[in-house]
Image 1 (cartoon, helix red, strand yellow):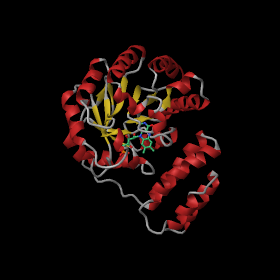
Image 2 (tube, helix red, strand yellow):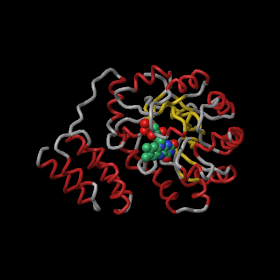
Image 3 (tube, helix red, strand yellow):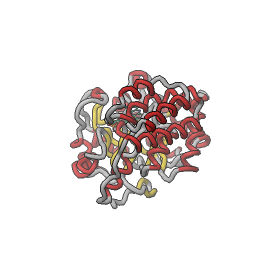
Image 4 (cartoon, protein in one colour):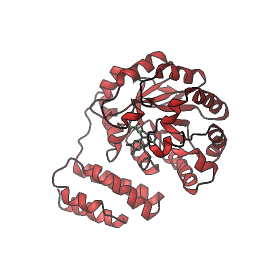
Length: 327
Ligand SMILES: Cc1cc2nc3c(=O)[nH]c(=O)nc-3n(C[C@H](O)[C@H](O)[C@H](O)COP(=O)(O)O)c2cc1C
């Protein structure tokens, strides 16, 4: 097993679950952690929202205490913001209200609403200001600061030198989504750029983009990265972490069946309905539903039903029917 430490903190394996806004709440993090993700990420949390007392941000931070109580994985709290002063002022508030191992700064989000605030990937257009901010963040944060980046905004830049500067100001790991902001989530991933970054740095580099149980070993080999970060493949398939751990240890993954997927769906329902109100939990689970049953025969009728559920019981009735009908 490859030794994988960030800032002296040992991670049990090189498998990281990515931050996914709208998905990686406590319930999904716990699903991924129970299947063996060594490091999970929160959804991105707004520094401004916290600074101006958003109730939802406080609720999200409160939920991080559950990770600490109930999972073995380490947790990265991901924050985003476009104004250096607010980012810095928010850090003590995050520390006071959340429980996490690493503070991750978002330098990759491509969404126009975020970019318009000069946050996320917009930082790639202000490298000097970004480095000054990270330097101050490292001083203020009592937790190790890590960064998740894209490799450029709308053109290839000297991302290797920017990453080196991050390392010099005390950033302890960098997760690299190997695409430009302008490439959003489409097209092939520039793993060669991740390799260049890895070769230039001493701190851990986490490779991200289009990675799943069938290609993670190739990506690790091609990039030399210390770890891989899995995003969309884990939506409705948290078992990807078990599959990768088993393959990593030279073992065959356990079979994935519609029955094992339904069991996971039910566990996910319990976790989310225990920690969120019925309306929010139902709506979030509608985005997972299709993925939990994707790729199996005879699920079309159920898929159409699941995306209309408004209560936990409605989900359970459909899943129980699926089990009874032995599809
Ligand atoms: C629905 C969705 C939400 C995302 N939310 C975040 C986020 O909050 N923070 C972040 O850094 N990246 C976010 N990302 C990007 C992912 O973390 C990841 O970098 C990207 O999806 C590529 O990895 P993948 O191919 O394994 O999904 C999001 C991506 C998707 C599809």
